[in-house]
Structure formats: structure tokens, C-alpha cells
Length: 453
Image 1 (tube, rainbow, N blue to C red):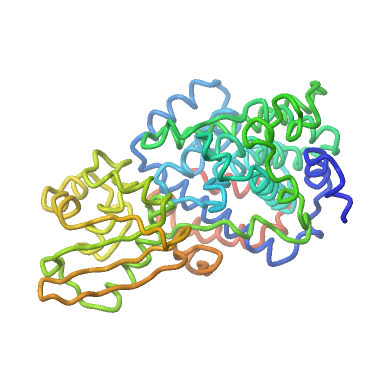
Image 2 (cartoon, rainbow, N blue to C red):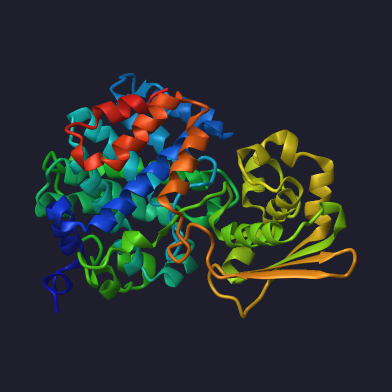
């Protein structure tokens, strides 16, 4: 049994995050983390097209009047404001990473405070990379210990609960916290852990992410001042995370093979702007149109069969109202993919999702069903043609999942696609190069400067 598995988990994870060096992170994990960061930056640049982005930008500007921190694809705001706005931008158009085991987006909480503190302090790229790995591993590990089915049954939403821990770990690693200070930062992060599925179907679920980023930043900065907090927040008998949120949780999962098996490698990326749980349906539909010449007027019906969770979350948007519901709608995704043979942010503009013919097709010709034989992300897609033919495919893992990963070239193309609206081509190439060689940057300031519009 390793030393970590015999320690109280808050302190074991704090010691791990505080002592994590780049040399202890396998090269493949470093490369994966760079891909996560580049993908998150692509999502943030796309996020300027989000419907609620102006509202969050105004809120972020109101938090403080200083301008020391860079906004991705924007200008400058305060440390707190940039953390909030960058966190929202990454998740604004529903295209960021997901830890599927806990249905938690990680980069919106971890990367913004890490970037802000690294920029403020002139930290090296090496330290930024280590901090992002530390924050991602802590958030996903704590999530594993929550015993997700129990956690979810209580109505909790992962990003707002787990995000503060990941953000605190990333900032603490940048600030050189010892294990004691990191554990107190986790106690302060846990005191702000919140967010439930009562917000589902509204943009508030995206607020959970950016608020989680800010909560972790505040937790770390307050812990750095010596503020007293419990060092055993995860297991405290009265109000501890695992006892209160998950009936005791699964502590063994949080600590198992810590430092040798990297849970952050289980994060999925999304090549398309659509909800996590319909990415398999989108993958399946693109496979069908790539294999067959399907004219939408020749389609009698589209049938999408899903497992229980995706069905419950996404079958209720046959008639969608606005961009956010369109992003959640499996019905709309099927309709627009068949008509446009594409699924980009252009397909989520009002003039497209508001097209009456497309809306009718989604409501009348697309059926979403639950199949108890399917598990997790599995989706069965069937297209019935007017001539009686049946075209079908079965998707076990969506593009971007660990079992079906995006290549680095595909991530870079996603970044280029959404960066072009806000950054010149020469700077896009520079940013890709800086992320690729992040560990060699003496300071991240040139990176954050390049990221501003």
C-alpha cells in the first residue's frame, strides 16, 4: 500500500499537488495537458460569440477596476474579473473538455486562474504546465472519490463542486505552497463547493464553471495569508465533502495509483459545439453522411437511441428556444447535420436554428429514444429513407474521447478555426508554437500578451 493511500485524502492530495514537478509528469501526460490547454484557448476564443458573454463580461468588469490580467481574445481586466470571464469564455459555446465519469468540465476552472497568476508573477511555462496538470489531476481525483451516481442522485453538478479544488491546486502550485498551505486551500475551496442540476437547461450551469475558477483563486490567495481552515475537508465527519455530498464516497478511488496513473488523461475533448452527452450522436451522424449520400428531403425519420442519462438530459429539446437550448438539443443537431453536413458555430446562429423548415424537421422527423441496453456514451443512430432503406451505425465513443482521441493536428485546426475571428494569422502560429514548447518559455507573459485581441 502506498503512503498516499494511508493518509487522510485531503492531505494526501495536497501533498501531491504541492510537490508535483514537471520531471515527475510523464512526457505523454505533458503533451496531453498541452492539448487540453490549446483546446481550451480555442473554446475561449469561440466563446466571444456566446449569447450570454456580454452579460458576464459586464459582471466581470464590475468586480474590480484594475486591469492587470489578460482576457483571452479580449483586453485586460482585474485578476478576479479575468478569471471569471476567461472561465466563462471557455465554456460559453458548449465546446470544452469533459471528465465523463463525473460530467465535469475541468479547463474552465483550472486554466483561467493559473493563467492569471502566472501572468501576474511572470511564471515560467514549465511552472504553468505543472500547475495545470496539478489542478486537473486534483479535480478529477476528488471527483472519482465522490461516487458519482450517489453524488448525482443528490442533484449536485460537478464543475461548481470540484472546480474550486482544481483551481486552488493550480494556483497553489504556482505560488509554491507547501502541503500544509495547500490542504488549507482545499478546505477553503470546499467551503465554496456548490452548484446543482436545478440550473440545468439554463446558462447558469456555465456560471458554475467560472464561479468555480474564482472560488479556487480566492481559496488559494486566502490560504497564502495563513487563514485557518480545516485540513481534512474531504473526510470531515460533520460536513466533509464525501460524507455530505456522497454518503461517504469512495476514498480508495481518489488515491489509487496517485502519481502513476493520470486521471486527467480521461478528459474528453469536443470537436463540435454541442453538449457532451450528444457528441456520440453527432459522431454517429457524421459517420453516416460520410458513408452515404443522404439528401435531407429523402429522410423519412432519424432515430437516435441513447442510454438513460443522455436521454434524460437531451430528449426534451425537440422544440428548442434560443441558442442554448439548440446546443443541448439532439433533435436540432441531427436536423442541421443532415441539411448542412456541418456542425460549427454558424449552425448555432439565430438565422439558422430559427429556420422554420429546420425546426419542423427537428420536431417531426427526429426521434430520441432510451435504450436500456446502451451504456454511457453509446448511441445507435438510424436513418430511415423514403425509399424504405435503413442506414444505421453504432457509436461506442465519440470523437475526442480517450478511446477515440483527437489528434494534435485536429486540436490545432480547431484553435485556428476559432482564433481567426479575433487574432491575426501570425499570432495564431506563435501561440501554437508557445503552447507546443511551453516548458521552454522563461515567462508566460509573451503568451498571455499574444492571446489578447
